[in-house]
Length: 345
Image (tube, rainbow, N blue to C red):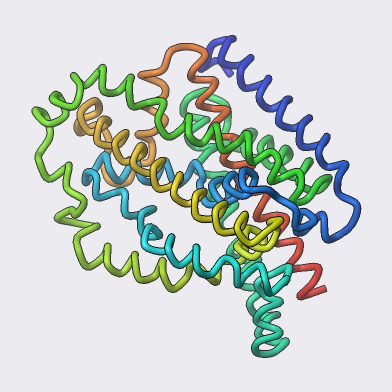
């Protein structure tokens, strides 16, 4: 890892060792499939907040929003704010999810409709999990490789081994307990670059002096104008209830109020983090004017980390990126294993 300092390397190694040891430690609480797939339905509000935040917040989301905002402005936020109007419905629907007492979303389709629909949904959900995991790991590996010089292949295999290790050992219990730590790292990832970037760009006044006013609008002239944003919001409202990992988020809580508060507040924190991503992209538009085209905009986030952060904080940011990968991929793996075991096998 010749691209980073020894102190950054020490921070990354300490994080990886610590999170793996903690995941393996809490995995001892798992005694049966109820614990593995649903955490014995005993999570408190703080753990549910962390679970909702980390399973729906990944490094590739931050990379995508930063890159889009670099090109078209604050309107890039809608690639993740598409779910912002779903939050009130989550408050209403989450107790219903929990009362059903199902383990997977496919269980609902089997009971409500027929066995074949449950099987069909399971195959689709497993494909979706594989697609999401591939995107998450690829995006993180691309960014970390750009910062450190380590090959993408080595990073991909490394982070995969980590989340598989404690995910298999401890299921949802290990995943959600480590999510509490990963959630802190997600907040760090979302806002750490902003003070350094604003200082380099001359503050908010510098941004306004150097950028077109359109860059501060929530609607862009291209890509995310009113019609695409409207379609994104509608698709978010329709699809949010059918996402395959949400049965674990809503059904693993100790009480209905834990479910409501945890799921809603976790999503609300994500909405705030998304503001940080979009603002980071707008700052990058000043610092890297014309440096990246449409195809290369996803490299902007890594370039910001490498140029702005001092030694030590670069390692912390790399750890935060890895943390989002581990949190999301472990949760998807556990939910996928439930689908395969219960609804296919």
